[in-house]
Each structure stands twice: as structure tokens, then as C-alpha cells.
Picture 1 (cartoon, one colour):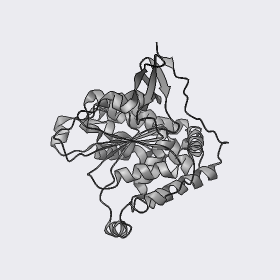
Picture 2: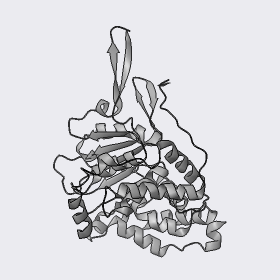
Picture 3: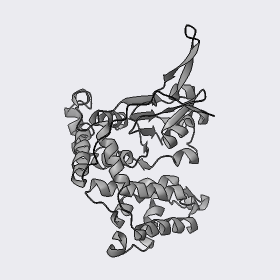
Picture 4: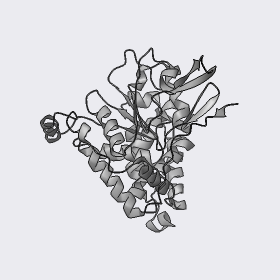
Length: 335
């Protein structure tokens, strides 16, 4: 049986924020990160929603579009710690979570924490590590803790894994298993910046000049309090039935070999609660579901082989589901 480490991370608490405070702090962080990441406000918002929903985010895109800068800017904006794991084929699980080292002088084992012990953890090119090393993140992402040598160590709060992978390269890559993909609350793609935004990047020399000068606009305790407020956001029975109807429709869609799991439905609900809270509401509306269904659900689905050959995409399937499933009335969505 695993023991719990007495080395608890510092848990800073704050009074419950008002809806207006949640909204203002959320936009303050987004605006601050946007000083580094030009023209990608929507992606920045989704990543921050992942934090507030207590989840993790997979960024799938080509190299050089700012994924690393995004993670660093977010950590700096919330006055949080930053850890980076560069996944390679020879990376070991202990390189991720840490290792216990024997101390001859005291005849005890001292735990040396790995880079996963941070508020924002960049798991760079996660699909280049072996499945065994990829799975080392599973407990951390799901439980907010790791177990080494029979002792359980809690991680920071808030805790976000921002994992990146390059879909254009397959040589030397290990596809993420379904169980690992399902641990990511959201999957986003940054894409290339618009011409105007790219000119601004050139003028500022990328993030080289901006990042070192970036100052926090909230702290980690503020973010934890905002996340707690998001969890209290009301989800009416009508919205819950809407989520279940979407899941049921996905499970019978002939284009899918694997539809939405109950975990996918729960993850979508949590994401909608965070979105509602950041917009000053204490209740979820159908538009929250529509806005987040693709980034929260598409990566969890498995296309049937014939549908994939016909050119179907998971994102398009989700969009079709949203178009076909009846939306609850405004009255039913708030009761």
C-alpha cells in the first residue's frame, strides 16, 4: 500500500471570487498571454479554460508556432512554476516523475522530484516517447499525484499538462493510446498566424524580448479559487440531457467505431462550467456546449475505416451531431 508523503505542496487559498472577479481575472490572464502569442486569443482562452476545468490540453500542430512560448507565458501570468519534459525515445518514467536516491549518510531514500512537479508542465512532443514513459503521466494527469517507491506525492494546484505533438511527422513517433488521449480535456491546434500577427512577431523578435518582461496578473491561488467557482456553476437537467443525447447519437453514428464515453460527457460538462463562469454566468447554456464540443470531444472518437477512407473527420462528425440533436429551450436550460 502506498504511503502519502508528508511533503505537501504549499496550498494557497483565496476567498470565493465573485462572477465579475472570475471574468476580469480570466481576461487579464488571456490579455497578458496574448502579449507573447500574437493573434491566437481563441487558443489561449481554450488552454485557460482547461486549467479552470481541472483538465489538461493537447496541442497538435507543426513546430515553430509558439507552443512552448504559450506554456511559459501562462505560467508567468499566473505566477506559477513551470516544468518542461522533452520526450524522446530513450526517456525513462523516472525522468518524468522523479526518483528516490539512497543517502548513505542517513541510510534513507531521498526523493528527487521530476519536472512534473510544477503548475504548468510542457510535455513536448509526447508522441516521441515510448508507451511506457507516456503512461508515467497517466496517474499525474488523472489523480494530481505520483507514486514512487511506494510513497504518494501530491502535485501542485493548479496543475496543467500542456502536451504537444506534431501530426506531420511519423518516423520515430509512438501514437498516443486511447487511454492517454482520453486524459486530455481539450485538444487544440494553433495554426500559422495571420499575416498581420506574424509581422508583429517579427517586430518584437518573437517571444525573446516579451517573455522575460512578462509579469503575473494573478497568482496560483487566484486560479485555484476561480477553478473552484467554475465547479459550482449550475448545470440544469435540460443541459445534462442534452449532453447525454449528444453522447447517445455519437454511439449510433455509422461513421464512428467508437463514440463518446461517459468520461467524454463529463469532461464536456466540466469545460462548459468553466466557460460559463468566465463569462460571468452561474449557469451553463447550450452555446457553451456548442462552443466546446469539438475541442473537448473530437479527439476521443474513433472513425470507422470506411468513413476515414471516404474523407470524414472527427471534427465534422461532432459538428453534424450538434446540428442533429435538439437543443433544450432557454427555460429548460436554466432550471
